Length: 153
Image (cartoon, one colour):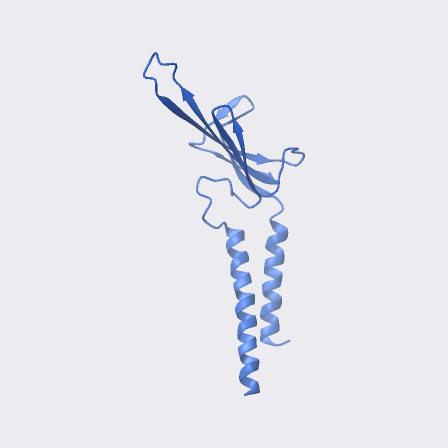
């Protein structure tokens, strides 16, 4: 087996391992009652064994009846949930907005580790390794292509 083929095989094995290992997810959970105890998003729990993560954002305008200051106040509530096997309210990855009386609720479903965090723009370990493996495969293919072109010249 050539070093080129060996590199491709190793990269494929790494990607396959991380895709298979990602079946049980870690998600944050907060602003919901679990066992009768509230858990605020100041210190969210990191839950394991999830099949998906959910982040819910609810914004509602509260209108003062005029006896105080007559201004609208915006109420914002964020909750994060670990969806367990048997959960019935699961949708494909993405955000879904629903209008409600005086505002809206947006539910975002995602299926990677800790994707419902406050700052979910950072790559998680598995995602980072998957990208590195993919880039390795692509660079190997490109290098192999250029190498074969040089041999033909």
